Image (cartoon, rainbow, N blue to C red; front, side):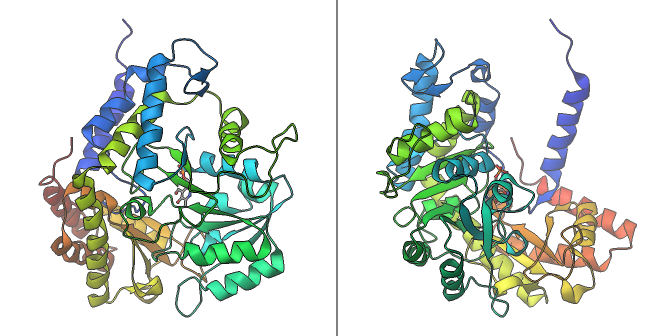
Length: 423
Ligand code: PLP
């Protein structure tokens, strides 16, 4: 027997303690259920299974075939989709697979600007999406902080992209996918919705559904969907390849087979079967009434958070939220997002600095912070608790130079969080 790696196990124990005691406001994080956690550490991690259920490049896949098929069937049911690929290792891998299935290098994409709320994979110059494709961007309206669809239409007509991406990392409002489809159709572009953030709310009808309107939909599985880290690709009705896209041999094929081939062997090798099993478990959980009330509470908590912020003089981009997150503009607090992130972290409140639209500060400093309710709702916090959180945040920011005060807030936070045990 090999000796236990105490170095790493001790670090895991420390991280577990941090997760138990801190107030987790990072909008993209969540806590998986004990059974999802157990499955991510299962023997399935030992299995190679290149290919897809029933057509693998390895022997011994009878069991993992059933696991992957269950994940596919369940997520199709969750989103009323006609196609699902559950193999992408992450949200970025899902987007890479879709872009390389649908585009040739040098083709044009139109995405939500990273500095206004979009994701790296939507065309940022430091990312493969900005290196392989010609990019143009849309953003939010300066006055309102909302997407301005007339302006997006103008940009699309001007740029004539081959593919448009609707979706964001730091946008607190619902997205009009129907309007995006009209824009895409007007220039003959494919429409990809990246619902990594609000997927859980969409699954339960709390936000507009992209499935009927978008050619392809991608998501992560670890944010509001509350599964293991990973990605998925979905399709609604357009799986017959409306644009006559071809495979690398020049043959026109169904969209579903182009997407499958783009994930494996196009962008990935062996799928992570332990993660796919954990996805299957999480997708099963999403189909329960318990998840229904969970995700409704996520949205209710975000609304209560908005109210508490407004009454305590915090400004918010777009004035509030429709989903699970809020982008707080700290311009009037004379503190940068970076400093606020550090101060709040010292007070046991974890969140991330974030640029606000038309930010005058750099991405490393920022004028904003982003908060979200998926994780604290899993812990069991309710609307009334949002006021306490905003009071704690305000207290900490006002005491930013008082280490003792920040330590006292941290103790208060951890005593509070220990009332909501994890695992
Ligand atoms: N797409 C969006 C909109 C995201 O917010 C994220 C992650 O934050 C991703 C894609 C990428 O996910 P991952 O970190 O799993 O690559």
